[in-house]
Amino acid sequence: MSERDLPIRSELERIPPYNSGLTLAEVRARYKVETISKLGSNENPLGSSQKVTDCLASPGDLFRLYPDPQGKALCEAIAIKFGVLPGQVVLGNGSEDLIGVICSAAVRDGDVVTTLYPSFPLHEDYAVLMGGKVERITVRPDLEIDFPALLAAARRAPRMVMFSNPMNPVGSWLRRDEMRDIIDAVSEDTLLVIDEAYVEYAEGEDYASALEDLKASSKNWIILRTFSKAYGLAGLRIGFAITGDRRLTDYLNRARTPFNTNAIAQAAALAALGDGEHLRETVDLAIRERERVARELASRGYRIAPSRGNFIFFDCGGDAVKFSETLLGKGVITKPWKQEGFDTFVRVSLGLRSENDHFLASLP
Ligand SMILES: Cc1ncc(COP(=O)(O)O)c(C=O)c1O
Image 1 (spheres, rainbow, N blue to C red):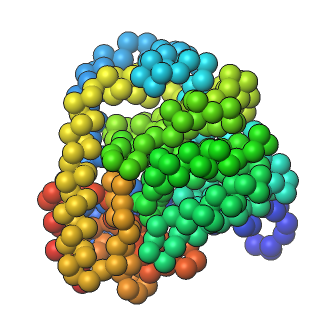
Image 2 (image 1 turned 180 degrees about the vertical axis):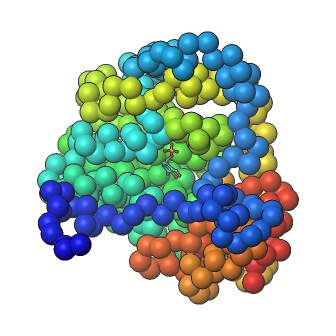
C-alpha cells in the first residue's frame, strides 16, 4: 500500500503508543507459564470489595437503561466523603478519561503544561494532542522530586501544572508544606491539576492529600482520583475529579461525552466507597509488602526510588525491556520504563506476598 497523508492531526506523530503491557492471556499463550504474577499495572491484588460483588449480583435495570449521565448518587457520596459539594464532582471513564477531558477543555495551541518527569505518559500526551508544549521537571539523581525546579516552573505561570502526587512511575512525593508552596505559587491564569491516583497508599507523617489546602485557596484547581487502584475496580473504568469551582465542573461536563461512565461502574464505585475495611486491608498489605520488597531489592544491590505508591521503581542496571522480558519468561509481569533517561528502570507493583515472592525469586 502506498504511504499517503491521512487526515489526522500532526500532533499524533509525537505521541508514542501507550505502554499498557501484556494481558494474562497473552503471557500465558506466549510464554507457556502456569503461574502468572501480574505486577505491571498497579492493580489491587485483593480485588474489589465483597460489597461490589453483592451489588452487581442483582443488576436490575443497570444493563438495559442508559446510566445517569451525571452519576448523581455517586457524586453525592463522593461529595459527602470529601467534604465538597456534589457540583464540584465530575465522573470519568477512569481518571485517564478526565485527563483527556481537562486537556481538551483547557489547553490551547502553544500553551505550556508543566509536569514531573519521568511522567505518567497521559499527563503529557493529551496536552501534546491539544498543541500544548510540555515542560518536564526531571526528578533529582536521588529520584526525589526536584521541588525548587517545580516551584520555579509554577511561578512562571504556565497554562497548566499537572502531576501525580505520589508520582507515578517513581513513587516519590511532595510533602504537605511543599504542596502548599506550589499552591501559593501558581497564578490565577494556571490550572493546577493534582492527580492523586495513589493517595490511599500515601497518607502518613509527611504526606497529605492536597484537597484541604486547595479548598482553602482561591486558585483554579482540580484533584483527580481513581477507583482503579485501592478500590480494585480497574476493569470497570471509573474515576472522578473534584474541582474548585462550580463553573469548572460545568465546562468539564460539556467537554466529556454525556454517558462517559457506565451504570455498572457507577453502582460498583458507590458500593466500594462504603467499604472502609476492604480499603484498610488493601493499604495495609501494600505498605507491608512495599517495605519488604524494597528491603529485598536493596539488599540485592538494586537502586530503588522512595515510594509512597503500591509499586516500586528501581534501576535494573541494564536494558529494562530485556530485564522485564526475562521476568516474563518466568511468569512475572512488570513494567519496563521506556522514557528517555529512565530506560534502565522497571516499575513493579506490589501484589500478594506470594506474588512478590515469585517476583523476587525470578530476579536474575
Ligand atoms: C498517576 C495516574 N493517573 C491516572 C491513572 C489512570 O487511572 P484510571 O484507571 O483511573 O484511568 C493512572 C493509572 O495507572 C495513574 O498511575
